[in-house]
Image (tube, rainbow, N blue to C red; front, side, top):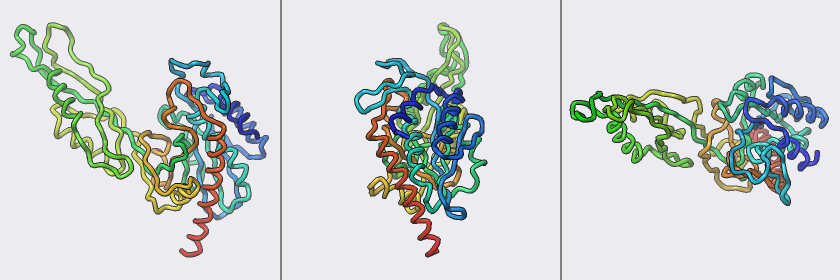
Length: 354
């Protein structure tokens, strides 16, 4: 199929997270018309190509959903518009460009020596439900490529997400007699200053983990010393630290009580010596991998060796006037196809030489 038409068609179908049925309906019909045999689980889709009945199985996964449109767009975010060779529209960059490139690459891999499994999932933007639903149905997998806009840089590590609730407790009193109380907001403020300067052990590709206070709530009345102040801390974690280690340190150094609000997104990393990393680097004509500060469905792939890479630029995601160029789309298609062929070649050599 014409790359520009496929991309435009996908971007033209609204698929805000939780409303992916229409785009899944369209894509199922389109894939069948292209000669694939798509399977469906709710709004999740997958299909396989290749000749490797007993060879390696390489997963390509990306997501169909988008975040809701934000303010500040110069055009209607739900109506794709070409500006020269670039398509503007919600999801063009994150991640319908990756989905389009993967589908176009699949057309070139029908005779490959391994099996390429292509999966397009729902609700990546709000919890990764789709990939968790679909993964058990895909059979044995040897490695994965997660399609996200990285400017085709090969990400061999990505941050996780740990969200903590901190509660500073004090003693109430009349403001006129403040010394009789203990101000919970003052106590919380001291903890927040401490968090701002707290440093964790750095990861070689991702750097250090920085605690960020994102919400705060405290006090019942303007004339009462507050006895409780709660604040939320968001940490984008790295694979060299466990959540338990991070929580233990904060609990030891803060006056506030610390509890977990969310911890489902694991930080991930794949050793540079793995065939999937080597194959991706060769396909990208790059020497070394990089790290990714954003999380993705990679967080739910367990111990499967994986990389994250795709056309588009992560800095355009979740912002107004999102776009991707046709040049980027074509480069992404070539990258995914070359990656798969090189991965299958490396795995064949590995099988021969043990």
